[in-house]
Structure formats: C-alpha cells, structure tokens
Amino acid sequence: MPVMRVARESQRTPLTVTFLKVGQGDSTLLSLPNGKHILIDGGPHEAGEAVIHKLIEKRIKKLDLVISTHPDMDHIGGLIQVIQQVPVTMILDSGKHYYSLTYRMYIRSVKERKIPFIAAKEGQFLPLDPNISIRVLNDGKKKDANNESSIVLQVRYNKADFLLMGDADVATEKRIIDRYSVHADVLKIGHHGSYTSSSARLLTSANPQFVVLSYGKGNPYGHPHQSVMKRLRKYGMQVYSTASGDIEFQTDGSNIVINRKTPLPLLK
Image 1 (tube, rainbow, N blue to C red):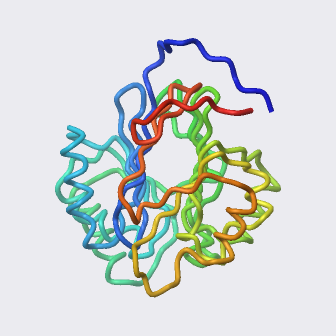
Image 2 (tube, rainbow, N blue to C red; image 1 turned 30 degrees about the horizontal axis):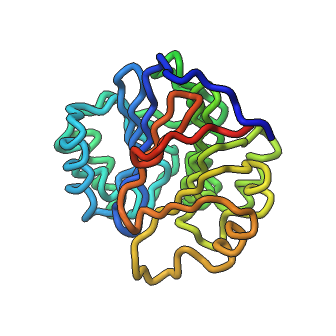
C-alpha cells in the first residue's frame, strides 16, 4: 500500500488519544482539536484517583463528555470518583442496566451531580468537534450480556482512524463488521485481550498498524490470552500495553505520534 504524502508542517490542531494505565480495566481520554475532552470509562474503583491526577496533569478542568461503555466494575468503578470531583457536561451510557453495588453508586453519583444522562444509539454520531467523526457502532441492548452491550466507537480525524472495542465479544464483532467499515490505524483490543474477542476476521477487517491492550500485570484472568497474542504476532501488528504505562497517540490526521516519539506516516 502507498504511503500517504503529507506536508512537512501540518497546520491542523492535533487529536490526542491516551489509553490510561488503570490496572485491570479500561480508561481512554480523547482531547479533541477544538479543546473539548472525552473520558471513556474510568477503570476499577481504585483507578479513580489516578484518572483525576492525569486530568490535573493535562490541565483538564472539565470533561465535555463521559462515556460509560458498559456497567462492569473495571470500566465504571473509577468513574464514580471522577463524576464526584470533576465537572462533567454530559454522560453517554450504554443503556445496559445492571444490578450491582458499583452500578448503583455510579447512577447515584450522576443523579446527585444532576448531569444530563443519555443512552447511546447504534449508528449515531457524537457532534463534539466538526473536524472529528465519532460514531457509535454498538450500544447496550437489554437482551445482551454486559460485554455484548459495550459501546464500540469509531473515531476519525481526516485519514486517521481509531476503533475502540470496549469489551465487545466475537459475536458483536461479527455484527459490526457486517454493518460498517471498520478500518483502523489504531485498534483498542476488546476485553483486555481475552480469548472471547479479537477474532481473525476483526483483525483482518480493521487491519491496524497499532494495537493497544489494556490490562493489569498479574491479573487472575490470564489477560491477554495467548491465542490473541499469537494472532497479533501472525499479522505483524505493533502492540502496546497499558500494563507498562499510559499509551498516548497524537495525530494531525496524516501523521501519528506515539508517546511523543518520531511521527509515523499513516498507511492506506
């Protein structure tokens, strides 16, 4: 495939996507070119403080949108502290209800802060920045299990594509691939690298250059599963893990920089 030609000095304000180190869980921060900020999940309860410290470090004083991909504790636990301490303009929820103490605490925090709360709808676009396309590829249907209900997001900035899979399983991957084009330069692997996700069909359809795994070292679930790692090695994808620290991607829509290293041209 040809390398996309890029001007030496881009005039575009960058999009920054940071996959946060939150232990055994998920949390992703999007900083849009127009200055708005989106937090997707907050990791487990104990990660809330670390997420807040990251916001302080980046001088982020408010969140324009918080997205709760699904109600598992390792995704919404840390959001409780964030919601209680950081101004949040709106929350986009999967729409999946769950009868757990963590979920009740999360909902109570939203109500106490009187934050507008809406359920995601598959196919909808989130109009936070006119230069960024953010589309929901999966939402929380009542009949589905929590992981099947994960919000899956496709984020596009010019030629740069990010696919954020939440904890979506193989069956959900299949439904998405059958309905949408899922090309991605950066793929956030589903369900922390569990064998229930990251099918060969998804990897070949997305065909990412870079893959991110979010998990904690020494977790009891065996994440990432050896079968997933074998597939990633087979397809020659560059793999990054939050177990070793935050992973930050910055793009002007033409080049992509990983943790502020040398810009790499996107391949098409």
